[in-house]
Length: 137
Image 1 (cartoon, rainbow, N blue to C red):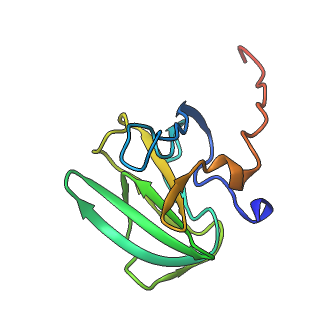
Image 2 (cartoon, one colour):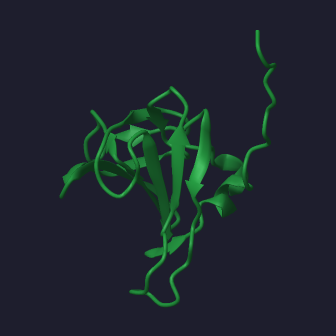
């Protein structure tokens, strides 16, 4: 399953890791916050169907049902897509906006399996390898 998932953004660093709550309603961080470097486009981490796209309280978000009980939520993300739209893995689903609990320029990537939040890294195979860039052109 993990080899079918990709990161929803490129050019990022992890700001906040997943922290499982002690119980269903306990404190925790139910996803991963990613700080973006320049590119604001967000893509679908796997094929699926848009379950929700719109504003909730103070932020825009998109939720994608990937089947087999897996559902992704990406926020704050403004999307032109609507409920029922099909997306392929890697399709652009929107752009990072502002609002919610993430810092400006970051996106929250949450995944639920059978209704319970899980660490998205288990579907991605871990953190991508760092690439060193030349210094001082």
